[in-house]
Image (cartoon, rainbow, N blue to C red):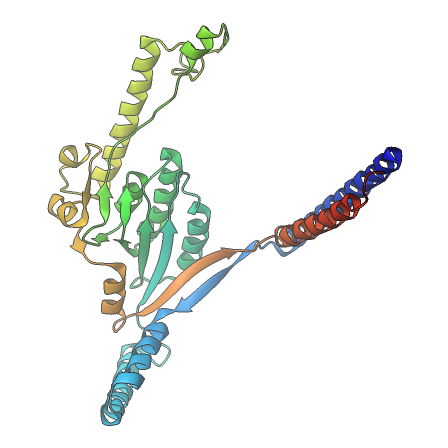
Length: 351
């Protein structure tokens, strides 16, 4: 009977609702426990350190083992042992067995609109500053098309902490450092660029859609009330005035002037008026304009330095919350249960 079907369907919905509530309760409990654990431990991630010299050596030896004849491999191994003894002797002469060569710390920053990696960058720089010595260096592999002014201003300020401690900062751009990305890059003592990396875009842009005429056409009024003459300038919904446009443009120009002053402060000798037009250039042309110092990829730089320094890649990795790890599996399990109930309910024919 149809009544039986409705009754069974109602029971099915009740079971599903109970299951969903139970899952949400479990997830909530897990999230609370994870939060308490993080508060007790005081850690929400961990710092990972990778010794890149060893990685380069492993790559080299893998090729040598395959392509070099045995006699040449033996000669190479003998040469390597001799070099290691010479380095050990040099260290001893410089200050004892415990005297280490200068270190090159490698950081990566992949920028989005909000410079979301700034928190990770902050932690990595703080870790480096705890152990860095005067002859150490930091290489930042930077990739960013730019974004929000205040977000990239904070990212640039994090890099200035390195300069403030007297550490050499080299910035390598393999693909793009534009707008806010270049704001970060100009902090470096030296900027490296791949030949076709996009560099520059020292400018400010803002665009706001306005649907006032569409709303007016459909007799929709928008009331915008403010305290303060310029609390709002341009608006999406209301009617924009020439006075509001002029004020908004004034704010853009002011921000642009701050950007130019910031770049001029860190790139002495740069013709700022010639490059602060909002244009961008490829690496080779950017070097001619003084925006970068050398045409070189980050890999070239690292391989060229590995014989003189110990290279360490520093990465802060956030711990994924336990609730986040379980939520996907719980959601999948819930979906399977719902599908099973649905199949069982749909198998009963109408009577």
